[in-house]
Length: 139
Image (tube, rainbow, N blue to C red; front, side, top):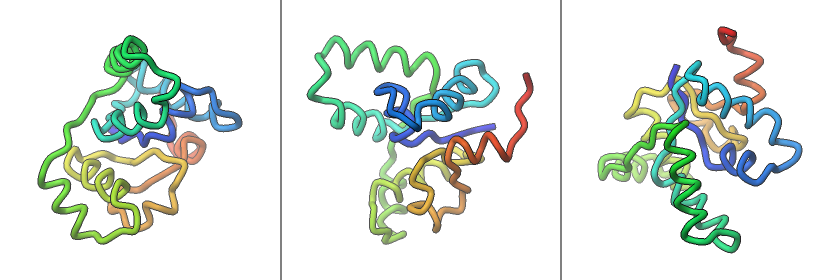
């Protein structure tokens, strides 16, 4: 199963954000153990660094990248993703880019806490808790 992981899920774990940490870390664990393949857009990584910039040194940025790359597959942003995202004319362009990336990699689901922003997505979007309640994973 392929999951495109949105920035808020990664931030939940990296910043141990309550009350979301519990379910987001379970998604992270599924990716880490290979029960699912977790993809992260390079755009998401850039957004993470921007959001966390006040608490990160260049060394910490490097450590985060290395840690994430052991668990998740980084997916490049393409010009076609941008063109297709623009055609969607969504209020949040970054979400449109995530949708296009998910389509291109044939993701099964987008994992985000902002499900309402993905209503027009052909790839179903679930919160971590929703995915864990809907899909059975091998132990």
